[in-house]
Structures are given as C-alpha cells and as structure tokens.
Image 1 (tube, protein in one colour):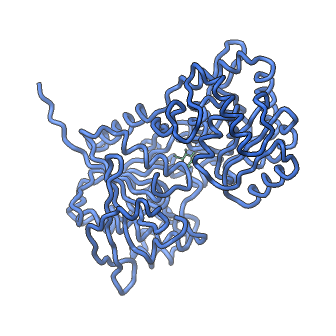
Image 2: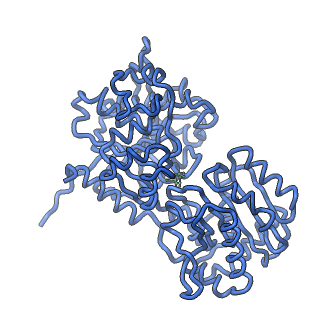
Image 3: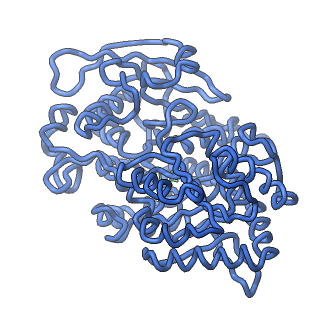
Length: 492
Ligand code: GLC
C-alpha cells in the first residue's frame, strides 16, 4: 500500500532564535525545534524581526525578496515592510525588515511600551507578508508574548482574508511572567482593533491590555515547555494572574518538554572545550577540564575542590535571593563557586561582592560568553538551579549531558528532568529540594558535598547515570508533530 503524505506548512514566529539573536532559552528552542521535525512531512519556516544587532556574518547574507507598505494601527501613513530570507542548516528563515522598529543594539529595549508597539507591528507584518511570499501556513506557531497578537489578528483583522481560511494558531508559553501589558489606548492606536475586543474575556487585563492574554484567548491550542509547568500555571502561585484563563482553556493546554541540541551540546565533539569525553571516561577527563578552567579564571588549580556553577540570566526567577542567603556558608576552603551571566544589577553586584570577598573561591563572570559557558559545563562538579519557577530550564539538561550534577528546586521542568539522588537505592541523577527556602537549599548542597567528598564512587555513578539520559529533541519533536496533526485533523 502506498501512503500519500501531505506536506504541512508550519510557520514559527518568535522574537529570538539562535544563532541570530539570543537573550534566553527561547532562542535555543526556536533554533533547534524546526530542525528536529520530520522534513518529508513538515515544511517548517521561521520568521523573526530583522534586528540590526544580528551579527553581520549572518545579516550580510540575508537576501531581500520583497517589500510592501502596510497600514498599521490608526496611522495615516502606510509603513514599510521588507522581507529578507536566509537558509540556515536546512531551515528557511524570514526576517521582517523595518529600520525604525528594529534598529537596535539588543533585541528588547528598556521601554515595554515601545517594545509593545514594535511587536504589534511585527505580528501584523508577519500575517501581511505570507500572501506576498506565497507561503500558506497551515499552522502559525507563536512563541511568548511578543507574538501574542498573531492569533488575535488572525481571528479579527485577517479573518476575512481567504488566504488564511483554515490556518490555525498555537501559542507556546516559555515564560508566563512576561506578558506585554500596557494601557488600552496604546493598543487601540497601534492595532486599530475595535473597542469591544478590549473586554476581560478577550484582551483586557486589569483595566489594561495584555498581548500574551490575547494570544492565549485566540490561539487554537496552547502549549508550554514541560508537563509540571502546564499544571502549575493553572494555580494562583504560578499563574501570574492568568491561572483562571488557563484553567478555562485547560483542554487546549499541554506541556511538551524541551530538548537540547545534541550536536551543539556534545562533550565528545564540542569544539568549545579542549578535553573531550563520554560517560565512560568523564570522571578523569572532567578533572583536566576543571584544572584548565581554574587556570583560566585565576582560581587555585586543584582538582579536589568542589566546583559549583551557576549559568543563568540573573533575575528573580532564578532563585538568586536564596543563593545570597547561603553564599558565605557554601564557599568554604574546599569549594569554588563560578558564575556566568548578566541581568539585574542587584544580582550582578551581589556576585561581584562575593568575588571581592573570596577572590580565591568565587569567580563572577558578569557577561555572557558561550565558549566560557561550555568550558564551565565541562569543568564543574555541580550546577545550581534553585529557581522560584522554571518552565523547562535548559541548564540542567546541558549539565546532565556534560556530567555536571544538577542541584535544583523541584519545580516545572526541573522536577521533570532531574531525578533526586536516593542513597539507599543508588539511583538518581541530581539533588533536589522542594520548598523555596534557603535552608533547604543549603542542606541540599551540603548533602551533595558529603557524597562528593565521602562517597566518591556514588558521586561518580550519579554522573554516569545523568550522562546516559536522553534529552535530545527526538521525543519532543514527535509530540509536537502529533499535536500539529491533531490540530489539522480538526481536533476530534
Ligand atoms: C524560558 C524559561 C525556561 C525555558 C526556556 C525555553 O527562558 O524561563 O525555563 O527553558 O524559556 O523554553
């Protein structure tokens, strides 16, 4: 029997994507997932803003394929929309070009009001561009608040365009904390949508308008990046005031765990690290990696020091206030503490302070460097991720792959991916604690240290078990494909 496979057209819309522009895990997911879907059945293309901060090594190769003028909001003048195209690792990327909106030295500005205007423009331009390109998406897969207006425009401004009849939309929540909220006037002006759409059952949110909420109301389906987080966000503690809506839409809400790109994160081939290893020789080789990094960072070179790492955006979400409580107590003479990341200045300064106080025990690298991050994944003994909430979290997945033992709070994706060490059954891949509490974190780190210093064989077995887990995109990609098929079958 012969099967005829119908190509399904999927358009990813997002505000960041590796290798072009990245501030967080969203970029990794948008970069990796399209490559992992089955090419013979899914034609996946990605659309992004053409930020001028995209490195020239890529931008210089973008090809201008079309441009037009679009009416935008209540403006009298039509606005320029250029479309650039670039193929990278077998995936076709489009970039919406408009210098007024996307001339920038970083993707997000310091003004949420301005960003809202920029992303409303982007969302409308995405829908206006597809007929020009002749790419008819069966599904538009939107990521985070910046693209929340796409499902809204699809069912309002573009509802009568026959081009989009049958097109479905999906809203994926990578982080519910950021929603794109500003006053309704600003939205009325920039969207030109009718006033009746700004009611509590649609776009209104506590007398303001909310882009992510719009996406969650109008999308055909909603996903988030782990099953536990899909449950958590239906509760007031994690729901960021949208828990009611998410409960109401719970039949359309599911969690699909992120993977990591196993080509990029592979300790056997990673070009950013000098020593290569696998589960069999990790214990010995990681010592070499540790010595090299200690020398590079100016820490005492000693492979018996317990090296704890943090690689993170430095924001409240990441549990750094807990780290502040315990930092002095974990940086004893047997321990080194290495941090890489940028973010809120209170946390940047906090880590600088500890480095000043313990220069031979703390290395605070308050910048983001991908090569340094890879070296730290290879060198560290443990990775700390004590998040207040964590939709998925990629750091712990990369750590497991590099034989770095995660110490995490049991929330969201962390709970789903790190199995707590059980000393009686000799099972587990990391150390976990449940309550958002500094004493519990301290206790857990000290417990990990005890296993490291006094039961080294057990510690080494934890490393091996972690490295043997599979968090590549394979099974997640299958789940996304299943969801696309289900939506296109009419969700029976
Ligand atoms: C956000 C979340 C993180 C998740 C990532 C990718 O950055 O905070 O938990 O892994 O998005 O989905």
